[in-house]
Length: 177
Image (cartoon, rainbow, N blue to C red; front, side):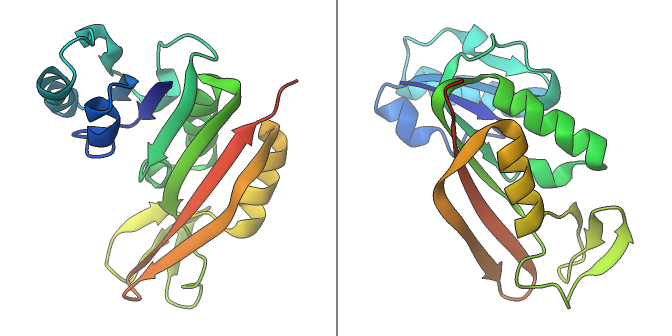
């Protein structure tokens, strides 16, 4: 199974997959993060080429279309600057997913903390923890699921973290067309 972590950071979500010898790919705009993932891969899965790990933005990944069985997008999309940036990041992640593949996304949402957030502009909000994020809600995720041609592989799940932020897990299967 080919796993692609879109916005991999230092690779915390890849440890299991590397240990279990999955074919792992990853991208992140931060060169230091990608260096850490390459090092992690050398330690846990020496057979993977360094070219599997690329310094590039999620919205401009150079991986082939429909190359991954699973795409992970964990705590990435809420860094979108605006709707257009969110859409390009999401499309960049979805493009590399094979038909029938799983898109696992964890991102900040307004779900459960609607009265505790302060609107900045568009879908950007100031959270109780002081950070500013692009926030989604159930309606947006539903419409995006439909537009992408996906279907929920699991119901939306949201965790409110000590009334400071809200993280939603959105898992889609890409329909065969």
